[in-house]
Amino acid sequence: MEDSEMQIVDVRLSREDYIKQQIDYQAERGIDDPLAIVDIDEVVERYRKWHKLLPRVELFYALKCNDDDKIVDVLVRLGSSFDCASKDEIQQVLDLGVDPSRIIFANPFKQNSHLSYAKEHNVDLMTFDSEEELIKIKMMYGSARLILRFKPKQMYEAMYDLSKKFGCVLEEARRLFLLAKNKGLDVIGVSFHVGSNCLSADAFSTSIKEAREIFDIGIQLGFSMEILDIGGGYRGRDVDRPTIEENADIINHSLDKYFPTTDGVKIIAEPGRYLVESAVSAAAKIIGRKLVYDNDEHSIENVMYYINDGLYGSFSWAREVTETFIASTVNHNANAEKYSSIVWGPTCDSLDYLTTDVSLPLMEVGEWMYIKYTGAYAFCLSTNFNKMPRPKLYYFCSSCTWNLIADFTRADSSDDDCAKL
Image 1 (cartoon, rainbow, N blue to C red):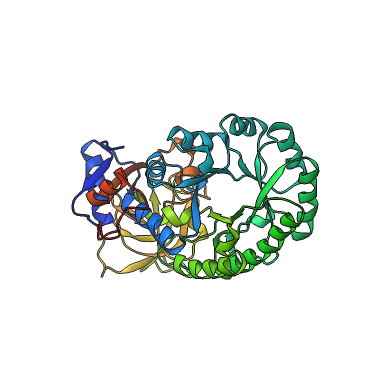
Image 2 (cartoon, rainbow, N blue to C red):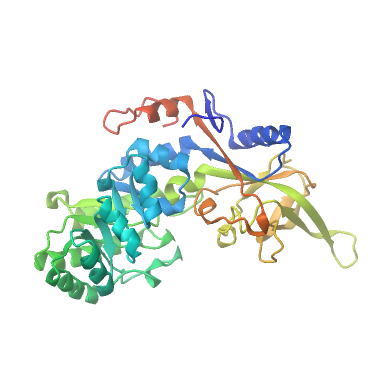
């Protein structure tokens, strides 16, 4: 992994300082394209925190959230398992040496050729929520181990309500169990998803309780129920509530109540943004500016900035957040007067904007903006619409963390090995 794009440092600097370094590095080479900084320490710290707070819950990283090769490689080295939704996602982690037993094909509707690929490579753990999917699996991969995905009765507010698309209701579960039984298929567990970026920790307690009901239906019908998959929905930003600590308290309590360790049930989850969202920060150059004055043209009403990254690049998520994610300009003056600002992306599309009302100091064309929380559902959704360049990623990691990654095992690594961890 160690190459010119990965900085291994003895003394960590701030992300703003790393961004400044890379801006200067690009400028020396005549490059002024957007860029992003990836904090490997943050990924490792969050991975280890998960296992400390949720010791019963095996982490299957949701690859769709951020499939960057270096981030995924770090997670492989740490021992992570993976939630994959397609042939190419499965192939990516298999090529990195991940054992097929550490992959769940967590797409309730799978393309035939992708299902065949999973069978060819012994990826046999997968989800379903419909009769038609059972028929397909019976025809193409009859020995698969199946997880029934259900739709929780009580859904809490989330940025993305996945229950609109996936999951059976409780009343359908018995029928699907019976269909699987009649077809000689092996259902070994149940799963749910409370919604991406879920805003309530209580969503996990009510869903785990309902999972117990469905689990017991499977047992009553003769299935050897072995796995509970509590899905994703864990928030990733530093300012988010519920925090991972709040989620963990409720999840641990609910698991102890409804799935005690004496049952021998394996608990897994599919976090994505929790691991990577805060680990990546971006920088975009101001390529244009327009001052909009009030009616008498004596004072600035607002400022329109045009930057070289936008909705079709790193920031497809930007308009769905309420807090200010543009942290500062790279060379900002904290005491400078602020103006109501609109931040536009670089393309010719009028939908290409990050925000229409953010308070920013007056900046000049050629300065750079610093933008937080670009690690989740950013680069994996980017395009090169208008042939705009995608941001270049630069990686940094403390030497302490880098050494731990080299031969990391959860059993013998010590929390005292590194102050950062």
